[in-house]
Length: 298
Image 1 (cartoon, rainbow, N blue to C red):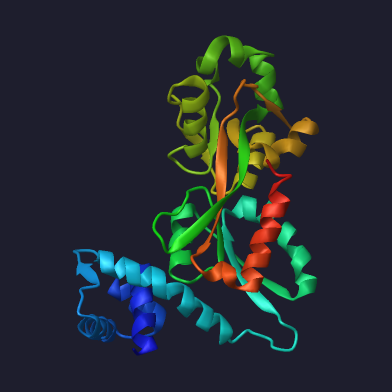
Image 2: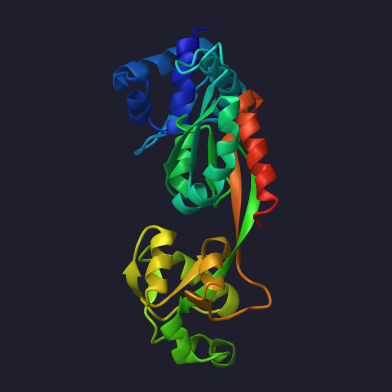
């Protein structure tokens, strides 16, 4: 069987679309369609069901992808242009949330650089980065959602605790214990700082701690939690932040924790890879190092 046909098939399976696969492969869409039809004729089975938007693999298509993808990935690794045979150097393509990747993952992985590991990092939300992982753009992804399907495998990495914080001026206005005694209603006059208009962190915190939805809308929206922390410290309002990110600001009195719930809200990070690629030494080494470092992160 022609390996080029299998490579096209796996790319279509990961991309979920002939058009996206064609762009990834540098082929025309008709060429990709022709290759998939040829493979289907050779196998005697339909591999994809055509939909209005993209394609859906059949059961046989899923089974073939799970069997073929790890071996194709290993062949690509062997022939990777960036491979340095003399030094054994490898490039690890890592993706994840900007704050967690920058503050925790990259500093941990830099210890592998003297061992010949080169790093390329990219940022995005869980949906974007897991889609990129499936399409072969990344080697490892740190995500706040567990990937589905057999093409990706994941391991829980660590939990992060979320803390309700505000600037010193707003905390002083409320007074000690105000939220514990008065509930979320006492927070309604305070502006909210968040990473998105949908208030993902604040909404999750309100649901877990107060069993309610926040009444306020976002006053300051910045798509990076480090910017959210800076705005809160400057007096912009309140926010829900990971403890690891605001711990120093709490210790230095730049922000104040408004509540210490008996069971603080947690969010789990997962470390994901394409099935089979953990057999590659540099990816396995990076995964092991991150898991080892994460013991101290929870």
